[in-house]
Image 1 (cartoon, helix red, strand yellow):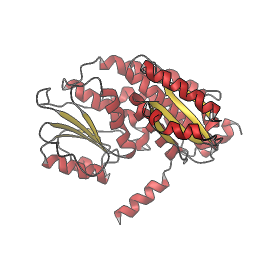
Image 2 (cartoon, rainbow, N blue to C red):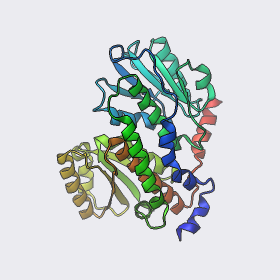
Image 3 (cartoon, rainbow, N blue to C red):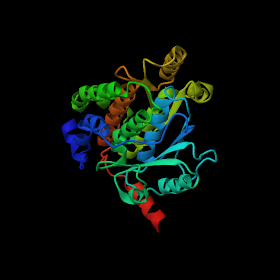
Length: 339
C-alpha cells in the first residue's frame, strides 16, 4: 500500500506535528528558566522526576550531562525519593499534564526534605502546587511529542545557574538546524525511516545502542509501544555482550529485526563489539539496520536519532493500520487509578 493511502490511519495528524518539531527546539529555548540562589557550592546532586513521556526527558538529560557536570544526575520514575535528597538537592519535577500522581507525590516529599524544586507542566495540579520556580509549557497533543520543551528549559536553567558551562546556545542552534534539514527528507515517500519501518513490520524489534545513547534507544522502544502499539525491546553495548548475546548465538530466528543506533562518538571498543554482534545476528537470520546520529554537538546527535526513530515508529503505526496518536490503554489505567 502506498504511503498516501496509509496516511488515512493518521486521523490526528501526527505527521503534521512531526514536521514542525524542529521549531520546538527554538521555542523551548525561550521559556523562562531563572534559578536565583543556585550555585556550584550549594548544590551536590540533581534530581529529575517524571514518568512516561514526561520522564524520558530526565533519562536523556542524564546521558547528555554525564560528562558535563561535576555532580550526579538522578532520574526518578516512581513515587519515592532517595534518602540522600535534601537542602543540597536541585530537583526538576516534570509532568506535562500537571496531574501525574507520581510527580505530585515526589514534589511533596522533596519539599519536606528541603530540596530546591522547579516544576514544569502545561498546567494542572502541578501548576497550582508550584512555587515561584515554575516553567509553564505550551499546549501540545501528547506529552511524548513535547520532548524539546521537557529538555531545553532544564539545560538553560542549569546554564544560567552556572552549573553547565558548555556553549549551549551553539548546540541548540545546531540541533534545530539539523532537525530542520531532516524534516523534509523524513516526510518524503523514500526515506530511511520508512525503509526501517517496513523491515520492522510483523517483526519483534530489538534496539541497540551504546550506554551514552541508552535513553535514545529506550525512547525508540516506547515510541514503538505508544505509536505503533507493538512490542519492542532494547539493550546497550557492551552490557548486552555479557548476557543476551548467548541467546542470540544459540537460536536461529526469523521473527526478529534489529536496529543499531550508531554515533561517531562511540568508544572504539564499542564500535568493534557492534560490528561483531551485527555479523553474528546476520548469521542467525536476524535482519540488521542502522540509524546514524547527525550533527557535531551531542544535543544535535541525540535529537537527530530521536527524530529519525520517531518517524520510524510513525510509519510502523501506519503499516500496522493504527492511529499513532491515541494511547487508550494508558487513559483507561488512569481512570482506574482515579476510582
